[in-house]
Image (cartoon, rainbow, N blue to C red; front, side, top):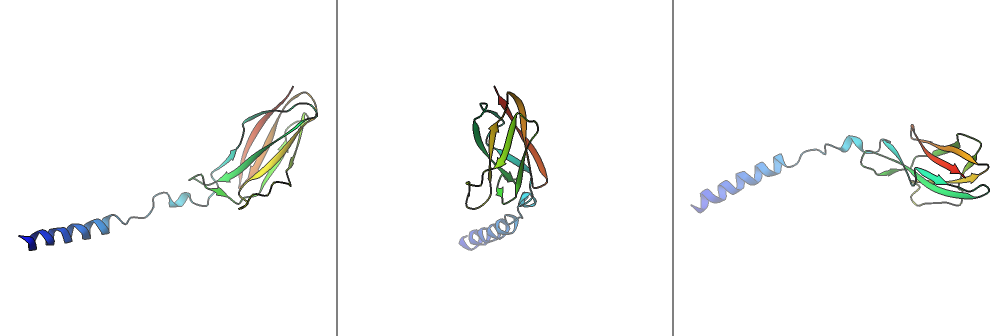
Length: 124
């Protein structure tokens, strides 16, 4: 009886180990830029004031990637620049500094990793 029981356990263990070791079905999402994740989708900045936000390029599993990004303004109501004082380790995000120039609205366009996104900025 014990020999038959241990034999069945051995066969079951062998099947579990061969069937359970499959490849990761999400591995093709690793390392490929899939989205830009930003801190805000809407900001309010006063005329003459400034504010910052961070953004990252992420892969399909939302892992931040070390991709370079550019920030540009869609209208003259705001100016935008890369914040050189921001130095994250590892370098998987960037911070933009937005300055309010005149009343109105604009978009800060974020580009990186072949992707594009934006943050709406209102200047009252």
